[in-house]
Image (tube, rainbow, N blue to C red):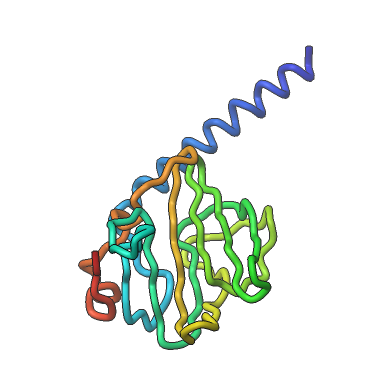
Length: 166
């Protein structure tokens, strides 16, 4: 019976911890600064299968040079993987949210804790056009969330350096 009580306590604690993370995460909506410096372009559109621009739930930030990539929120590294051995995708879990950063060179591992504005890696150069792009995407309960609503485009850092497209 004691083990059942401990298990129930752990489950309830993890649920309330997740709710606390959700509340903190949701309180930052519309307040994020871009996680890179020297941003020269913000693209909130994607090409459909015919090459036409369509609105997107994701954002691509472009820089002229490699830049530190900073965490947008506190969370636990859910996964780190690479498709080409040069650029990694880091997925950070914060409550019910998953935040993906792609195009990053990182030393993070699954299970690491990251804190808001902590350096999580560096932008890597794309081989095909020598640009430095950071792809960002957000889900809640594995459903896409429009990450573009989370940035504060009015701040000097975001507004003066980058122009929102899309």
